[in-house]
Length: 173
Image (cartoon, one colour):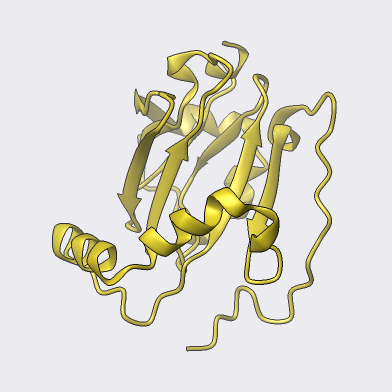
């Protein structure tokens, strides 16, 4: 199917800043067929994630259909002062799997924060507004944090209640 979210997109050069702040503390690289050779460690991971066994495991365990989906690999580097407001992933991300790599002993509680809405003010259409508004935390309750443990992962399915982010208070850990 035609993915309108990425149609006519251009590849952007990503620079790792020395002192990023807020949402800009996130440095992101998208891995695709054009640059995966530069990330040899990712090739084996990609092969596993695309294997019939793993896809069937996800489909059976999560009760979802992945037949017409595609894999998108992003490498993210969050600095200690990184924050991102509660948000839902884009509708094209049927499953999000965050693999934590913690070689430099970052605090365990610096993983992904999970939220519930205190009201029904927000939906997918509000994601952009939410991501750019650090005051939105008042409308959500943080209920848990996925621990940032090396070689662990956090997985969730696309749904209307999969609110996640990184709050500003935890970001100073």
